[in-house]
Image 1 (cartoon, rainbow, N blue to C red):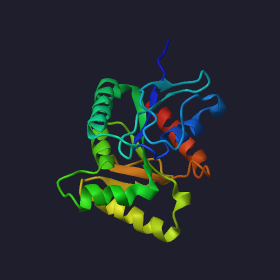
Image 2 (cartoon, rainbow, N blue to C red; image 1 turned 120 degrees about the vertical axis):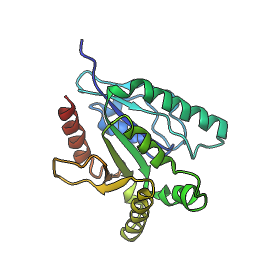
Image 3 (tube, rainbow, N blue to C red; image 1 turned 45 degrees about the horizontal axis):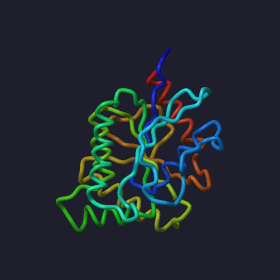
Image 4 (tube, rainbow, N blue to C red; image 1 turned 60 degrees about the vertical axis):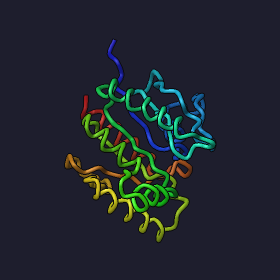
Length: 211
């Protein structure tokens, strides 16, 4: 029996990973996973699959922004994620890095502006996954919560900051070919289902290419 390829979903806690996972499933109401407002609720690494779905989804545990979390716990979860990807990277045909648009500035201020020796978690994840040549898409979630003016400022800050780590973030286009060293991003809202159909098409197209 052929093993289904896996879609990787990862990012900080409370960015909407579980909500996006639910939207991608053929029977969202039957999904028993937790998708709530409690940060750090997803802690187990396990695949989600349905018979009619051509791939599995692995929603990795989030870290950062966890209520009452300790640095030791965050490091433990981060280590779990690293070990998991090192062991299973060849099973992933695509990776989604989910960001909460409302918290991009906070993360960059903490790890990029105030401490020049630190690397923002999002950029660290991207560089780590690129080592395994996993195609990536950055999901900028919760765009329905920010104004057009704030969105332009926040996204410009993200793109310019990423360049300092040799990460070239570009808004995804409809062209088929993509330069390897560019990481596309997609504006998204799990609540409003903004660009959900487009995300599904991108996932299915990437799956067909890998197949």
